[in-house]
Amino acid sequence: MKAVGFKTSLPITEQDSFAEFEIPKPIPGANDLLVKIDAVSVNPVDFKIRQGSAKNTVLETPKIIGWDAVGTVEAIGENVKLFKVGDAVYYAGDITKQGSNAEYQIVDERIVGKKPKSLSIEEATVMPLTGLTAWEILFDRIRINPEKDKGKTILIIGGAGGVGSIAIQLAKKVAGLTVIATASRQESIDWCKEQGADFVVNHKNLVDEVRKNGFNQVDFIVDFVDINQYWSAFVELIKPQGHIGSISDPLENVNLRQLKGKSVSFHWELMFTRSMFQTEDMIEQHNILNKITDLLDNRTIQSTLKTTLVGLTANNFKEAHRLLESGKTIGKIAVKF
Image 1: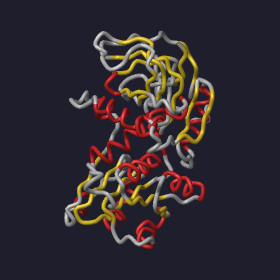
Image 2: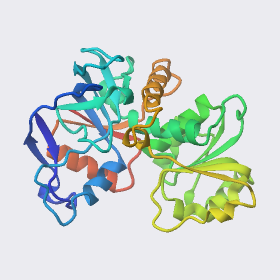
Image 3: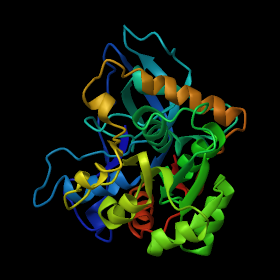
Image 4: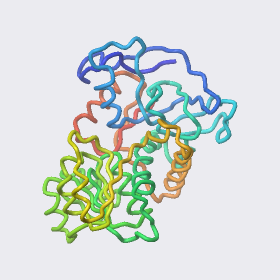
C-alpha cells in the first residue's frame, strides 16, 4: 500500500520532511478493523510529533503519522462485534501505532464510530480527534451537566482552532452554556460567532476583555492554546468552586496552589489516554463518536472543515503542516485521497 511519512525530523520546508513510499498492507488483530482510508485531517499533534520524534536520527522504517480518518471497513478481526465489512467509519486512532496517512490502517474497534451519513468524507474526517477532545474535556473531565449547569459561563481559549471550534458548539448547543471565546483577527472572530459563541474577546488583554463584556468571573475555563501564557488571568477570572481544563503542553510549572483559596479544580485532557493505557472504559470513545455522529446528522452541530487538499501525496501533507505551523489556521484541514 502507499503511505506518506518521514525518516527524520526536518523543517517542513525541507524536501524530505515528508516522503511517499510503499509498505505491506497491515493485517488486523483480534479486536481490529482494517480500514481502507478515503480522507484524513491534520492536527497540531501531527506537526509536534513530526518535529520531535526523529530528531538527530534516521529511522529504518518510515514513521506514518495522522490521527483522523474516514474510510470503509475491508476486513475484521475474529473478536470484532461492533462493525462489519463494508461499514463506513471514522476515528482518531491510537498514538502508539502507525497513523492514518496511508491507504490502509488497522484500528481497535472500541475507538471507532459510525461515519455521519449527512457529511461528505472530508467534512467527516475533521471531526474525530477534535470532537473527542472537546467532548472529553467538557463532559468527562470537568463533568459539565447540561441540566444542572445550563446558563453558566465558559471561557474557551483558542475558539477558532480545531478543538475550540467544536468545543464552542458542544458548550452552546449541547450543554446550554453562555460561551465566551477568544479570537483576535476579524476572520477568526466571525468564525467563532458562526460556531455559536455568545461573546468573542481578544486574548491579548484577557481579564479586561472578559470584564468589558460584563463578566467579572466565569464558571468554567478550557485552554486549547498555552496554559502558561494565560495562567494568571485564569486564576483571576475563575469563580470560586469553578473548573479549569487544558490540553496544552506547558513549558513551565503551573502553580496549582493559586487555586486553593477558591477551591477550584484543574483537569488535564489527552484524547489518547484511553487507547494508550487500554483503560477499562476505552469503548467510551466509540460511544462518544456515535453521539457526535447523531449530533451532526440531526444538525445540532456542524463540521468544522475549512480547507481541503486532494491527493495522498507528500506535497499535500507538507502544505497542510505549513498551514498548521503558521498558527493562523481557522477550523480544520482535510486531505482527501
